[in-house]
Image 1 (cartoon, rainbow, N blue to C red):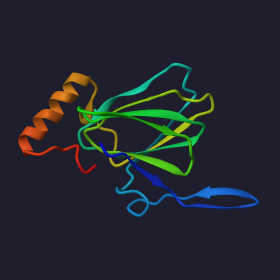
Image 2: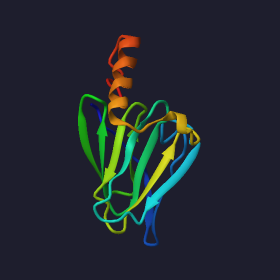
Image 3: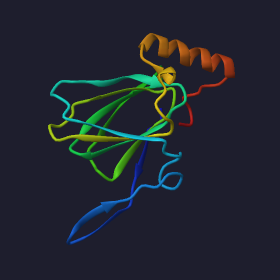
Image 4: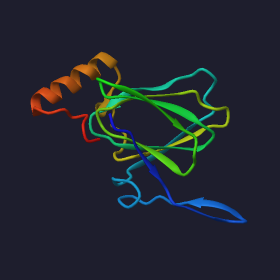
Length: 145
């Protein structure tokens, strides 16, 4: 499984730092929804789902957290701790967020508006979905992402 991180250009001087992110320029999709997660309590894991079509960029703009990515065959853990770095999460990818620092703020840029029908919230259902999708199209959908 290939992990894709985007490093966004930082601009700064003695006054501080600024990072600007533009759709279809700095990230590979149009932004339809933005939300952020904060005040996550110690030991709490979030996520536990995949999306059929939605893509995301996750940016820990303050503090740090870990992201578990799972394509149904392989798992990788990614540390987010730089406010100028974004993790690309493609569709058909299970994700869990955890080990949030006390001050963590996780910003999420999403390619679609909220649609409860796009979510897969059961892990076995996710694995079956990916397997059936690969069988249907005749190739490994996890490669190349």
